[in-house]
Length: 244
Image (cartoon, rainbow, N blue to C red; front, side, top):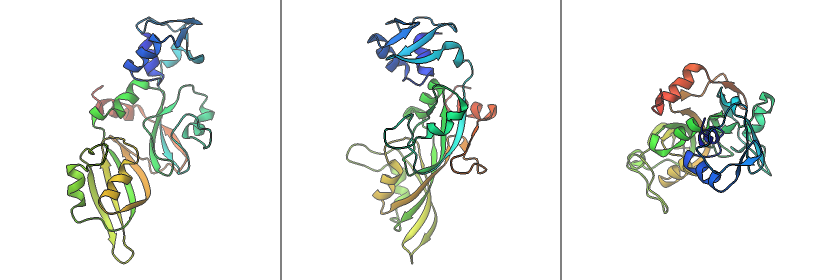
């Protein structure tokens, strides 16, 4: 296996990003610095980045994929100085190199994929792949009559114009000035759903992701629970990014 592919599979970065990391002498194989990202590594080799051991190359033979029903209050990170992270939930699995596929805000709940497959994770989160994510939102305020059309055409923000998004109003309560909706987006910008709703007259008070690409949240999973993806589900993800 090429060194850059191994590092990408570990979630260190994209293939182009890890090439730069290797070029800067931050990677060691069996204790020796290697600056050639195309160098071959075998199952007998151990690889370190910035002194952190990633483990044996042979450990990557099997990729691990999990679906988590993320609870509110956890951050989507491997470690955090202040808050508990979603990766903390997986400590009993005894697996190295797990990370989240994309992120959910600390107060957002729902479907979050966790894996140790850097290459597939990159494909699933790359904007060019146009992978849809569906959210259920509770909203303060009744949205503008043309809200769905405006989201479909893209909302212009100061720093970017959003990609077309889909809005489906599920219910509206004029007496309490609230509504519920499904929002489907295909990119993962910071606070994107909340900002889209704010742009059409509402404020998100509760947000839960219920679908990621072809996968829907397993309703049997309580908040904080997870399960391994089936082989069929992994194949669905691969097909979604053209890797079937």
